[in-house]
Amino acid sequence: MKRRRRDLKQAAESEQEERQSIAHVVSLRDSDQLQIMDNVKGDNSLALFPAKFPITRERRKRRKYMCEIPSHLLMEIVMRLPAKSMVRFKCISKQWSSLISCRYFCNRLFTTVTRLQQQPHLYMCLVDQGGQRVLLSLSSTSPDNTCYVVDQDLSITGMGGFFLNAVRGLLCFSVRKKACIYNPTTRQLLTLPAIKSGIIAQQGERKDIRYYIGHDPVNDQYKLVCTIVTSSAFFKNVKSEHWVFVLEAGGSWRKVVPLENYHPHAPATVGQFIKGSVVHYMAWLDMDTCAVVSFDFTSEELTTILVPHEAGDVALPAARMKAGLIEYDGKIAVFDHTHLKEKCLVDLWVLKDAGKKKWSKKRRFLQPCQKHLVHDDIELIVKGTTQDGKVILAPVKMHSQFYILCYDMRSNDLRKVEIKGVPHIWFDKECYFDLKYSKDESEDVIYLET
Image 1 (cartoon, helix red, strand yellow):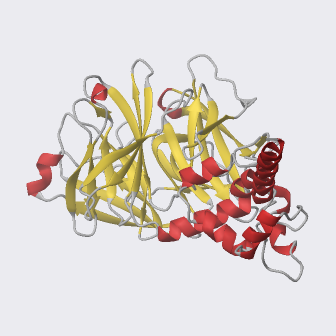
Image 2 (cartoon, rainbow, N blue to C red; image 1 turned 180 degrees about the horizontal axis):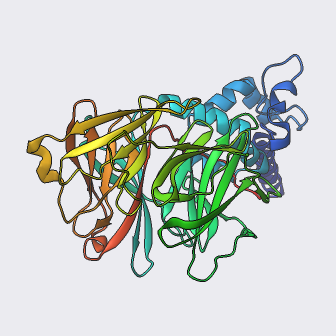
């Protein structure tokens, strides 16, 4: 009996040693990104069972059939696992958590998944008048993208207000005028500290705060830029300042020093997208002057380019103009659908040369057979472009059903795209929603830390 107990104890210790050895297969930290590749001098592999552990007779039998996995191959294997599995495997040990969360691994994962990813993706945030919120993930169910279906509910407690933008799998919200970063893959939520702004709204003035998230590829950093604006009625006495936050341990808000040709402006409620390491958004300098503002996350510089009007055209004030910022043939463009309902036409201002601030104008007339898709009692808003360049138009408010309109500028074709799978409780009440089309975003397992 004693001998049997001793054998059971040795077997348990042997099993425990094997688990510990597996946990030490990879030792990787953010500070020494890929030293794992250099630690194996003259041997480009990692043994699953290091020799420092006592070799029992049972272990000797197992090692006879064991093979050594090269370190780079081990990383390639882990990269091909589903993102949810990676998140679970972070609980194996600190070493595995460091590997899966490190910046090098996340960048490799993002590059690989983005290159292989074919299906477009949508994020939808719904908010009712009572403050109830939900964040939904949608995917296309047809090759021609005529229908999107909810495939996942990503909502968590404290998620925040409207969904603003996304970059490389990270979402940005605003919570009581604070920025909130959410990783839907890891379900990690991070709220940034408030900004101590020097702009104070006077009596009769309005104060707005907008956050935009982006990625600096040179320094491999995630950053947020915040625009704080105060103005009186009809965009009079506009004052604005900008702040930057680097998403890393010990990060804090820094004020951006604008260039000499800087123009104070108020960002429009819609019309922003990220192109490379630059975020672009529409803004108003005053009631009659529209501009495109660009912020480079690498140089941290702001650029303002005025949107022109042709001779003879009447410049529409901000209160009447309905437009949004899109991407057209790889260039920045302003899609103006102010006269879509009454005249069945849209104007497209394309920034041909950003350096020379040269614009070109295109005009399209909607086909008569598609006029029924544009209702007089429904206000439309621009929500970016799809993977194949179609402009997304969505109702500002949803009452009984969920859908979007996709407008192909080249073929002059407007189509209705249904959104299915939204919980029925949202059909019986008035609600607002924000929509983000993800063309090249992939799931990210990066750990948010400040």
